[in-house]
Amino acid sequence: MPDPAFVTGAPNWIDLGTPDLDVATAFYSGLFGWELVPGGPETGGYGMYQLRGRTVAGVMTVPEEQGKPAWSVYFQTPDADATARTVEKAGGTAAFPPMDVLDYGRMGGFTDNAGAYFGVWQPGTNTGLGLIMEPGSLIWSELYTPDVPAAAAFFHTVFGWQTQVMEYPGGSYTVVRPAGSDTEDASFGGLVALDEVPGEDKAGPHWLPYFAVDDADATVAATERLGGRVTAPASDVPEVGRIATLADPAGAAFAVIKPVPMP
Image (cartoon, rainbow, N blue to C red; front, side, top):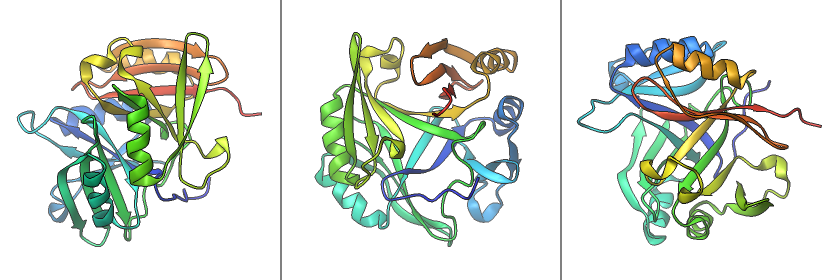
């Protein structure tokens, strides 16, 4: 596929904070075939995971006393400092203010009005992930939040996101897409009420990245074999795909999906 072309407000980066880089690398290499490109001292040891020579995620060692193991999702912005000001006006907070990462870009970390962490990436020489929407790479992002309408309003203010509520028997799902996008094909994630998904409420408000896979059941089995944990077994979602929610050996949560074939 061609290099991804990201637009303002869309996810353009993800990274993993983990207490043991070697254990994490062995797990994700076995699960997705990722290879680690170690970071040098100029990046503080921040490395990249690659698949077939294209970057699929960043990774850094985070001691347990500094934070729990977790995946983070970053959204594209043309101006990280302006986004930081908008976040605060909308009721969010800055976990760390925008800063330059050499000439790669400018990044900032924030929490939304419910406390869910997210990041922003203002591209420099690093324009974002090199591979998405293919097996072993990011395909979807989901926010678990106590108040879906409030979250939708917050991110509309910050990024201009558009939302669409999809009704299904017994509930609804709010799909999000970037500002100015008029087709469902532009959707990149969803907003989910914390109390609608068993187990997710224990983690509090958070973003969950989804990785595409060729076989969800095989990925579930591999997760257990490699020392990870299955938090929700593979199940079919009509017209969407077969989905499972997992955790790596350190406890960082993520989901996988075998999408239904596109018409």
